[in-house]
Image 1: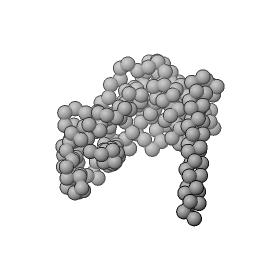
Image 2 (image 1 turned 135 degrees about the vertical axis):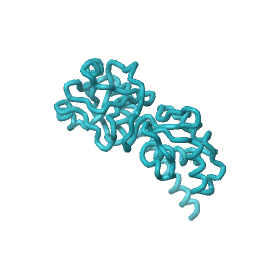
Image 3 (image 1 turned 180 degrees about the horizontal axis):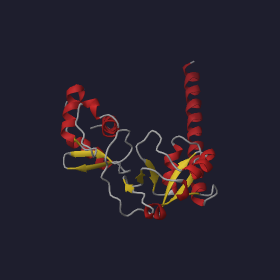
Image 4 (image 1 turned 60 degrees about the horizontal axis):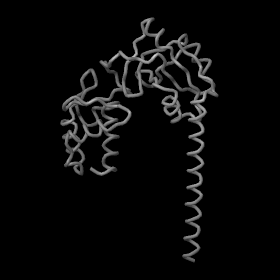
Length: 223
C-alpha cells in the first residue's frame, strides 16, 4: 500500500466512521462500530482499483494514527470523536486531567465565558489535553487562537460528564461559562507555539521565493 493509497483510504475511513457510513453501504451500530472486513469488501466492489483491499488495511491505518482518532477491536473499527452523526459513544470517563483547553477567536472570549461553549456543527464539544494541543487545533481555522481553560474538577463535581476520546482529545456535551478561564495571551507556552508558527511561515515563504527564482533561471537558460 503506497502513501497515496494510504492517505486516500484514511480519508474514506474518516468519512465512513464520522459522517456517512451509508456512503459504502456498511452497517454502523449505535456506538459507532463498523466491520472493517465488510467495509473493505464494499469499497473494493464500488472502486475496482481497490480490488486488493482487506479489512486489516483499515486496522493498520487506524492503529497508526498518532492522535488516537480510531479504536480497533478485532474486525470492528470506530472513530472516537469528530462525529456529525448521532451516536451513543461508550467512552471512558476516568483519568480526566484537572484542566482541559479550548481555542476560540479573540472576540469570542468574553461571550464564551458568559454563555459557555456550544457544540456548533459537531455532536460534542472537543477539549484538548494541553495548551499546545488546543493551539494546534484552533490554528486550523484561526490565525492566533485565544485559549480558555476548563476547570474539569468543578465541572465533573457538578455532574458534567467528560469522555476520553483520542490521546489528546476529550468530549463533553456542554460546558457552561462558570467553569471557563482565559489563559493569558503572553503565557510562555502560547508564545513558544506562536514563535514556532512564525518560523515555519518564514521557511515556507523562503522556499516559495527560492522556487520562483529557480523557475526564472530555468526559463532564462531555455531562452
